[in-house]
Length: 165
Length: 165
DNA sequence: ATAGAGTCTATAGCTGACTATAGAATCAAG
DNA sequence: CTTGATTCTATAGTCAGCTATAGACTCTAT
Image 1: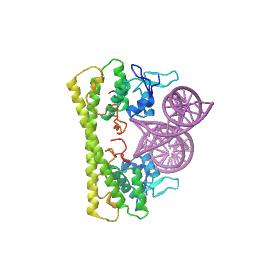
Image 2 (image 1 turned 60 degrees about the horizontal axis):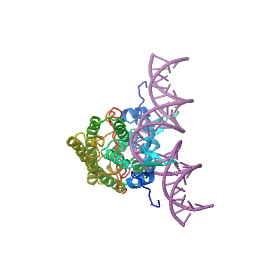
Image 3 (image 1 turned 120 degrees about the horizontal axis):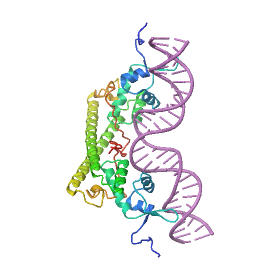
Image 4 (image 1 turned 45 degrees about the horizontal axis):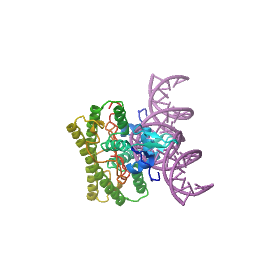
């Protein structure tokens, strides 16, 4: 009775313990619950959430899904389907296919950005410090001349190494 | 004197006209002004913004900068520097270098995601429909087992097919 | 008994780049 | 002169996935 952690045959975990073991922050766990991604097995008399082992598998599922690029909404949908006894394999595959296509598109995009940036830098090196524009950022290359209303003016966000590809 | 558009030697544009010609939305133009990216040459007696030709070059600069991945804050900084007569070429190059590194990192990340996703899909094909977990999304591969508190659990966003899978 | 850690709910803020709304004024055409 | 488009300012909302705060409880160790 004096054990540091009380373990029944199927041990139950408080949210902080789950956080520590899973690496997912406490607030995030509650947030996940609000998004129907996880559900505590029960509560203590005082309202503390209690999780069983399966939460770790579930969190792994969520993480894995995120890793391959699914949104939390998608993951929640999959989980809901599975909970209702359905096996949304077909749809999940569709999602995966869609995500793969997106990934390829983004890869191509990023490669384009990269090439463009490198060429711009190279152009600076050639041009040196001419006057007129700021460090030759525009004249460096002539793509994207702000005259096309149709093409989507895509701009990648980047702050530093935040998440978001 | 009865022309559709009054043009002086250096013609001035109203915000809607700038929007139409540049492809940048009116609200975005005002937003850019609030971020010190553009400034109207003047105003009409009634307060309408008036832009001269140079705004298009400026917008091109902004777009170009976005294309290579600079944030609006960075662009604003560059513009402010240039306006004060400085030539922030060195810093701009630093930014570019940093951005290039980021780009490479993200490229690598995306490639990793892609590979992982493809392997997961392939694993599904091999495994078929086993029971236990949802469509084998977890067992398909064993990376990212939600046990590592240190490594940042990076997850890319993707909207794609919102509701209908 | 009390300090301090952990947990609870509810709500608001963060990131970046917009986008939308409300309500008023102004302008151009018929 | 009236209608409708355009513009103005100021403020709030969007997206996704968290993250932080406030204020109240509860649990554990000394």
